[in-house]
Image 1 (spheres, rainbow, N blue to C red):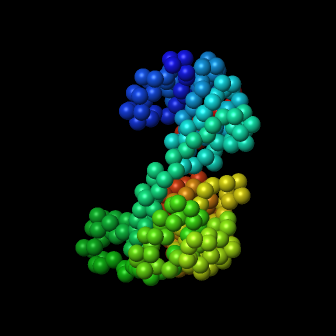
Image 2 (tube, rainbow, N blue to C red):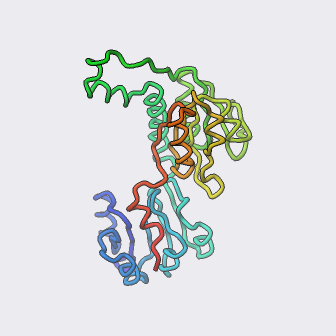
Image 3 (cartoon, one colour):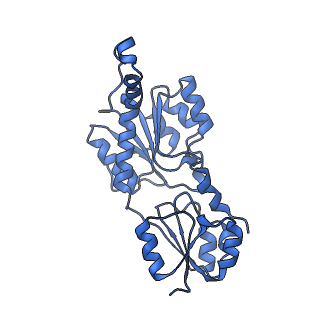
Length: 274
């Protein structure tokens, strides 16, 4: 099996690398000074490519590997992988659904609580000694009872909704289609969803159609008392519009687990020109 090349673009867990090295010819792209030359030198032996949510495989990259058989995404997301080309060439694409469902849902609730109760800001307030100088921090607002709008009611969206129900929160949602197996109220557009909730949680998959799906219209519909939480992909949110809304007070707050460019060195591997 030593002839089977497995290409890894970034350092993986040591245990995983050890197991791969036992079974295959492990090719560490991240350690190569000239990545394009490295791929050309090993192109014929590379049959497996391991990616992550931030590192995909575009057409140029895939076409540079004539014997590629499988792309294993070390995450749920496949939005940076040219799936149509993979289908044409018979390249299998795998991902890891459900591995992080609970963790992402937990983070979403943590971000909601942090924004509404201003936990991070309160922590800085105490650490900076302002409590002694200016007294108590301003009152914040509770999470309990607020309407939570979930954008994307898939595995993660449902897990978030279930947790929010524990806080006595009414749940509303928007997805590509109405779900017949849930009791939550469905809204046919994101704008309508935003206009009818206090907290909008983005939990949908990233597609070409929903880039910047949270735009100025959606943010304005959410309003000056609304909160945006994004645990999906950074490209779902129009970041300049979000910043403007926060600065101008058109939105109460935002909790972001993802950004459009994060981190830049990972993105550089997603489009290696040969």
